Amino acid sequence: MKRVIASFPIDDILLFKKQMLNWASRFGICCFMDSHHYIDKYHNYDCLIAVDAIKVFSPSQNILSGLDKFYHENPDWIFGHLGYDLKNEIEELQSSHINKAGFEDVFFFIPSIVISLEKNIATVHSVNKQPQLILDEIKTEGFNINEISSSNQVRLQSSLTKQEYIDTIQTIQQRILWGDCYELNYCQEFFAEDVAISPLSTYAKLVEISPTPFSCFYKIENKYLLCASPERFLSKKGNAIFSQPVKGTSPRNPDSVLDEMEKEKLQANKKERSENVMIVDLVRNDLSKICKEGSVIAEELFGIYSFPQVHQMISTIQGEIKEDITFAEIIRASFPMGSMTGAPKHRAMQLIEQYERTKRQLFSGSVGYVSPGRDFDFNVVIRSIFYNAENRFLNYLVGSAITFYADAETEYEECLLKAKAIVDALQ
Image (tube, rainbow, N blue to C red; front, side, top):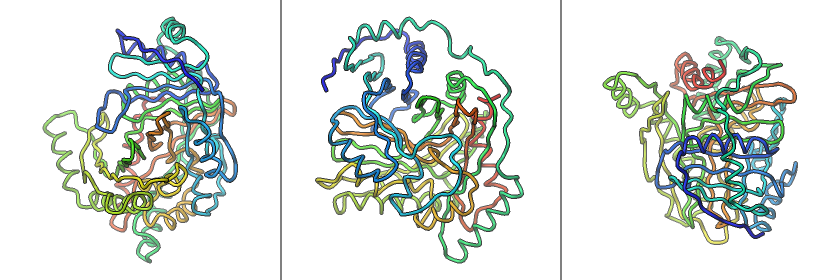
């Protein structure tokens, strides 16, 4: 498939991003990923957008073998998602919770148009339309998406009370004491029914409050993901592969001196470091299945990174992929990400299904892209709103890592802290 590629200088980047987002939302399928200028050595683009599906991949069974076939038959841009319940094929598990938001376990598409933004240069990759015409279309988008308002109040409910949450955490800790697992990521749901929102304005407000390096506006017909994720799942550049699990959270403080103390406190927190290193070990084990012997290393341990609402402890694990490893083999070895399951992974996921009350669906899954050169970058879907415009259902999930030494009250408050930007965006 031949694409016409052309690059253009952009004068007002912030305005152009809003125009791109508004333009992209016209299409039935679109993916808008924005790093909000968080730069690290693994990033490829400031912003990447894909619209108008030419081909789609969305099977219900034999997913990984089908995904490899789709990947190899289409050496082009591929965008889409991996839902959490892909675990059922990878690990031979089951899920019985109801799928309310409607996202499929796996969905990928080849877009007609891809636009990458790096610094002040927009590059248009188009199959059937001249890049200049596309740019002109985008620049005619005149209104401010922040001005679109929701049509009714979002009244959030919880899937369990605070006391039920605390009781469940204490039960999980008993399972840890028995040796069932040594860390488990437990999540709770907040939801609203019969609600109408503007996905565009809600996303714009969410990332205004919480601009993060792996945010995305993702639309599949009437289903929307509004994501403000700080976490990378997996990135590949050439033969190098990277994962950056997030484990460890502390609040920001408006006083710069106290804020610095929060960072130092998080850096020294033995519990948070213990949780982080457990997942680092799990990720190293996952990557060792697909990487050359001796190449998997923890490049950074316990790095502290600051975002508008929270400080996060992030580690970086990297390795060199073996020759002839397929895309599906990479996913099979590493998905779901250890930061969202716990360890050991298989048993943790069994206990998650037993004790959580909600189908995670796309939450703790991943959205990302594969480039024509076969590099890729995928996020971890957290700090996200899920909205189905057809059945008017909205929800978000939030969780934390539970160990034997975790305090249930503290974990509950950490969940509320992580969800603050979402709650503010929905008000």
